[in-house]
Length: 443
Image (cartoon, rainbow, N blue to C red; front, side):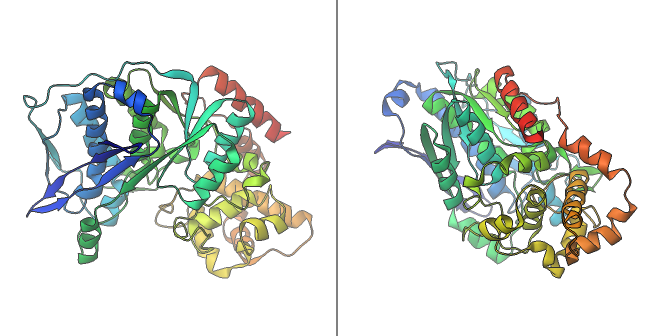
């Protein structure tokens, strides 16, 4: 529904016995003239796919063995694709709730293709010179925005339910425009969660992929440039014989699968790719350290998201502190970004061990690989030792219990910091831009 400069999408879901959900998505500051020239089937197809991407959030409450689609059509390729997204994207959810998702026909899709014929992907005009850049409020999207803006690329910053951190990064990045989308979760789902229905992690980055691509069609952008790193390819634990990856929908596997799906069923010419895919989190942190204007505003802590703060207690806080510590002055890190030295907190010793792989699983957070985390702690230790200072409790424990058993850390450090993963989909001109920037970071 187009109303007062906004495009509103509404969805209807039902689970037995008669529990209904009606979530909404609103795209702000819509270009009425452009939208009026889009065919109704284009808008309906975008709405249909946004609705499909809402399914995991509501389906997980009961894990119904059958998903009945009554608002559109799916072919065999699509059914297989969506099943894979459910099984891999909700892997952590299945693990946390001890659900055997590997049984045959764990979930099936029921479609009536005679009601809704197959829709072709959008093939209209898109501007190849403009880049749509999703902003999440963390350091990665800030790096992407800053590099593209400095290179004088025409970018629009896109954000879903933006936090204060997201809005501040958008302001500082000086992009040509911002596109804001709001998504509301039906309150009935929250009530069911309180009553004990199944709950857990869903592939949120997959939702961002569909939503940002839909907006690329609505606003005429050919390129959707996300900021997912190489580190997201590493899983967390094996469960039921399958790898469980908290960051599956940020991984290159998902990126490739989504790009193929998008060009088949959403928009033929839109290119969805990650600008930072060749790099580890530690390398991105090194680059981010060169942009101090973002230090006071960026946030990565999920627990502190609602209050625009760092909780100073979780795995994500400690990981970000660790990867920034080698490259940022102590005083700046512990005053401008964090409000204390997290290495002094003895209660984070066990958290550090988990980040280094000493636990049942790598923490279910958006953190780096075990290898780059070992390198990061090694760099932190070197920094403190070079100053001749006593090691704080976290670093002391990491050295005595873990790193003392590691070998070749100096060579491994160089390998990580100079690493470049060739498995990416960055266009040639932007790849050359990133290569030049990474070389500057290493100088």
